[in-house]
Image (cartoon, rainbow, N blue to C red; front, side, top):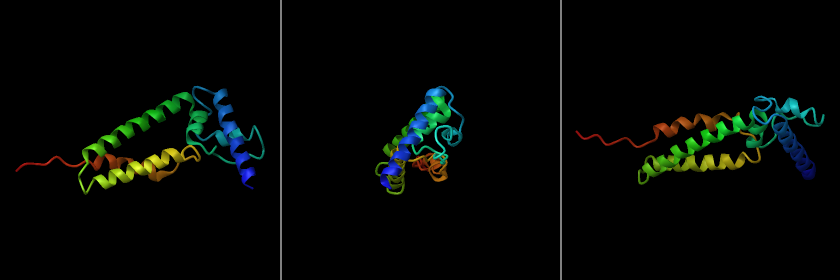
Length: 139
């Protein structure tokens, strides 16, 4: 059973790579990898290829992956800045640490699963903008 699962995942990854090679710049279109996978084998029934980065590359091409990674880099910069600014703030620092750990886990998980349509990670992003410690106001 485990070997069958591994072979299935290898087939999905091959589909993603082949679709990227066929449509390198703009991809096949968001959400289309499941339809394209059926061209390769009737055994492929999933709508994702179990790798976020390869799925973006296959569905949105180099352009889409560049935008996605750019977004992730900007987000990481804001997160790291918040971690530095909140150092020693007992009410804020734990939240930044929790978000940092969670998003690092999400990035690693993206190598083995597709998490583009999971809402919670993306809904939590605005927290980063509102967690920053307020400037002290002198009265």
